[in-house]
Length: 424
Image 1 (tube, one colour):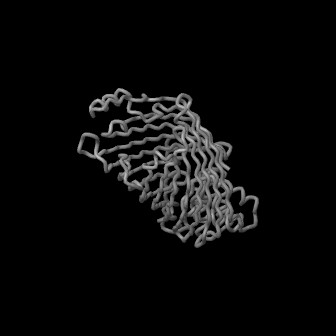
Image 2: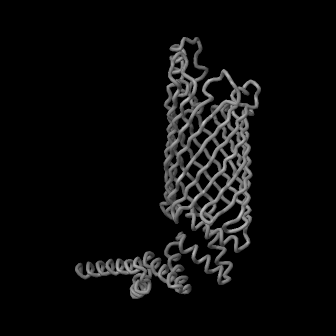
Image 3: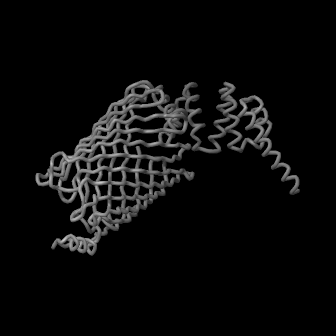
């Protein structure tokens, strides 16, 4: 019995390999003939996908449609099958079936080519206007709300530089509650080689249980115009934001960030962004801290169905708007980041990212000749679950360590939170 079972398994393995080899050699008819003879393959998603691809290459839409329907029965989240069927259903005027698949695909992370296909479907349906909303709430704990070096370290530092000052406060830890909403409107004038308009509104607030003076309120509005090419898009947004912090309407920022998105092939996408920001403090006694930021950022994404990995580099220069006696405003910042978002299955995702930021300031340390240097490290781990299609809950852990030769800015912290988000 064992020998018979081994023979059958070996036979099926060789069979699958042979069909795949025929497909790789572009002999689609031979590959299809082999798969059709394997009745057990009707419950094998890999063989059904191969069947569908062969039928598609042979321009047999009916056979490809049947095979992709079997794939979707075996895997409801298969993007390849959903995209093909949505396209065929629309062509055959099966509007209800096509719309259901398009709505499902809107919620997935798609490769650039798949996103273009989806946009083409939306354009053919005259759904050029897209309105998206997400509302989120988060509860958590922050071990160092005020990013403090610790009163002991600060007192020692003041003593070393010959100052009579003492630390005004120690590390503050607190539970917090944050909440926010993002509203986005997109008017698309075509599938490709066309203009599009976009408007975004972002609102955010965070309240601390035992550190109310560090409560944050933030609002940002962004308007932009873009143009889509065959394998690229150019977007020019202008944004204005306002920050309330430290019990003050603290500052507002004007941003212009031209962005070029480029598709290299089915799975690789890059983003290059020029950055200009002008920060202005509202209180008159803080106006000497106003600055401008000039930067360039490049990001590269490798997409796998609903998962992706990414890397980015950033170079930034900050310059005070006027000559000032305030230290540590003029600086050069360089950032490197890596991360991944992995779809475990059944709506479960995990995300891991690491960010390193090196900052060199033009000002030297007090009583020393060396420049201030900061080494900022940020590690984030998320575990999330999408349910009822429009809801997502996530458990998040963040560790931050800023290693600086300027003692008041040398700190570390841990943040743990649980969030709930609604997407419309």
